[in-house]
Image (cartoon, rainbow, N blue to C red; front, side, top):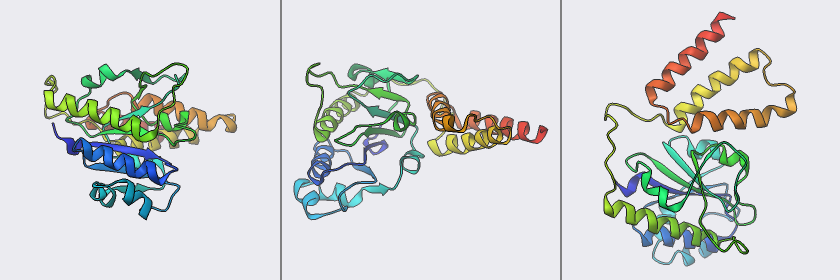
Length: 237
């Protein structure tokens, strides 16, 4: 298990100070990878670098994306953090269950913006949602505080070298990019038969499809098989 497999993803962060503090928290526990999606401040800037203190290398090596779809496509497992329970068919895990995750895979922990957190649409890209237990009357956590809690727990798990997984080394988990390509083929066929109606419900229907496919833990072989099935169904018409 390697810490290089793990990334911390900030979705639309609003404050330079929080971005810098998150980089510092990442380095505190010897992680390397920070990903930003559509940050509000100019990135990087002097305030971000100042608050990162000794973690300027994390800032300089970080990756920035314009949208969530592109940012997450190469991860095997995505875990979103949220203070709210979601009425979605996405598996909820608690802090103790993080140790069950296979850290040999590419893992991303997704954090929402300071003001609004993550929407249901953004969570639909993830395999799990994670809630940090807090005072029920005051649930909101600072972005960097949430990240450092997760980083400390994951670091401890990796040091303990948690249980070995018996899954064959020949089986490779499909990346988000491979699942997206398969989904696009499915969606095209559905559009060809005018499946998405009424049109105003199409966004929520796509969100539900992502919830189904992204939580299935498909292998690359299974993804190719499903792509062939969708392609064949298209030809039949």
